[in-house]
Amino acid sequence: MRTTTTLLGDYEYEAVNPNGNKVHIDMRPAEEKTGQSPTELLLSGLSGCAAVDLVQMLKKRKRTVNGLKIEADGTRREEHPRAFTHIKLHFILDSPDATQEEFEKLGHMAATKYCSVAGSLSAEIDHEFTINR
Image (cartoon, rainbow, N blue to C red; front, side, top):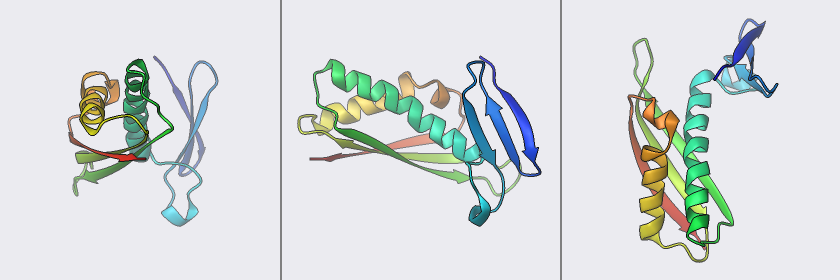
């Protein structure tokens, strides 16, 4: 796996994979941002990684998935390197037929057993689950 990251400006970069897919990386102050910072991208990667497997597992169980949202909140160290010390994932599923028990079980599996991003982190990662009907 490879990406190439190129400087666009003092606080802006572009990362490109071999297929030409691009991600805009932006380290400017919040009010000037047009992209995500590297740490925001890490939270987005963690959420996306868990989401893909969770949706597939629910669909294999013939559950209806009308929507899934994952809110990721990260706490970072004050000193450098400002690594994440704790990450909370709140999974919000729109489904008329998924049960809370199976949602939590499959969500934990997706986010811990199958997610390569989570397996690469040393932060403690918690999960929370909500179903909207």
